[in-house]
Image 1: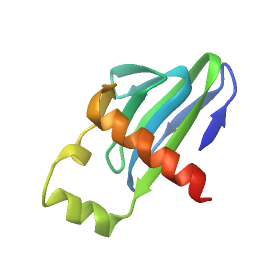
Image 2: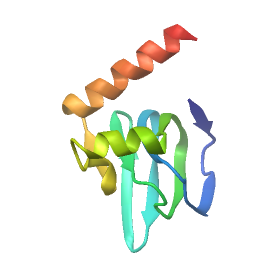
Image 3: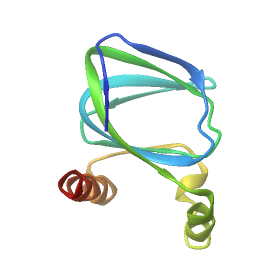
Image 4: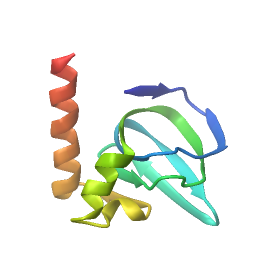
Length: 110
């Protein structure tokens, strides 16, 4: 779980692993190539490995829960779905509900 202050920015960067994030509070805009994607509370975001992106947080900042998927797990998942192969965002629905449940389990476990 990470907190980002209002109007913070993150320069272009990549993550070696695929990762999944759910926005718990706040909002921000991500820039990947020529694409911009705004996210707010209850948005589930999929980042494939090595996706080049930058982030600008809005006036509220943000609180985000993220988990990275180890390469060996990514390979196993790839046998069943390609969901981690391209950037994606979901607002509500089953994927977001599942991520919220995972957050709740992790929060009470530690």
